[in-house]
Length: 254
Image 1: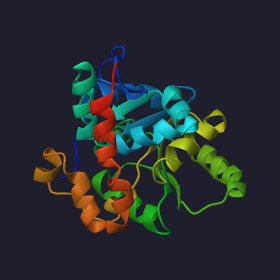
Image 2: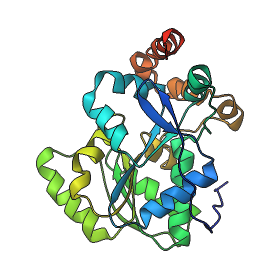
Image 3: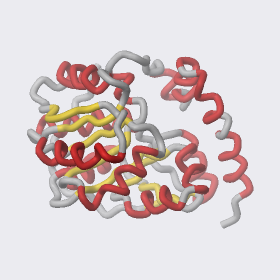
């Protein structure tokens, strides 16, 4: 069932944060997060939104560039139950869990309502096109103003950014994988056209039907990562990092 976003009627309230191992996570409701994102889409410069999970927090521990991307982002949302647990453990906070794939759908719905074009960048050849078809099925009047796969070289970036600019899109979804997508946005933000830029990982694969989404009962229990691992066992080395995150939180001293 497609989500049915509601028009934003008021300005978002000031943001509050919880610090998880140096990464500031915004603690606001999904409704407020959508409102904030819409205001960013309508602004006069490029903004980065990050949906963070435990693996991104771990990656930021060893990457100054990713730390800088997080510090400069306009919004960082808690994507996983691991961050909710960590926030409670460290600071007694309880940020709303907003999975990136769900937030992307919400923003596409708002883009349709506001007649703002969307641009898709990433995935294997043909995947972005399949994702665009799925979006058109959910949101018949949404304009997908541009798309291309994620297999490009540094020398192709100028042409990609020119295409983004020409598209007049205001929502740019990048499926390049974490942390490549976050780092690419941060590195190029100064020359990107106005709008919201968000890394969405494997979302295009789900939308295009290459991967299945976890059943709702698994998602409600915070086990979507386990379902994805079952479809992509090559992710074992990445998933094996999760206990390291738990140990860092348990041993952390404020």
